Amino acid sequence: MKKYEVYKDIRKRAMIMGLPISLFALQMTVVIGSLLFIIFSFSLSVIILVFIFNGGLYIGLTQLTKYPALLHFKKVFPTTISNKKACIAGILANHENPNKI
Image 1: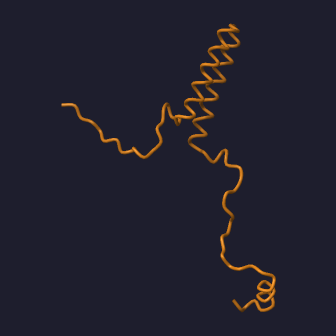
Image 2: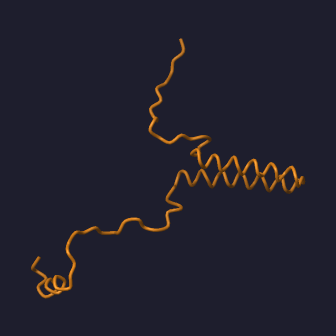
Image 3: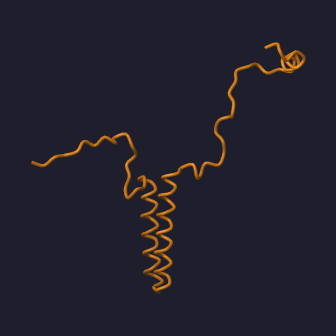
């Protein structure tokens, strides 16, 4: 009798060859474009360069999937969050008497 495993990762993103659907679609678009490039300019050096480019793109996209913080450039949230009312008088009053809170 055949046994089936329970699929427990139902809430995770769908992955094809280690890439999310959108990045996999980008990879396949580049592959089709590179095939057209090979067809219209057929030479051994072009074939080798296209294979290297496609392999590098695949490695880059998988690294981007594993470490999405690589493209995170700016901070979204401030370092501290406070709902203390800031005013000049309050700053000066606390500055004059630092023990008073």
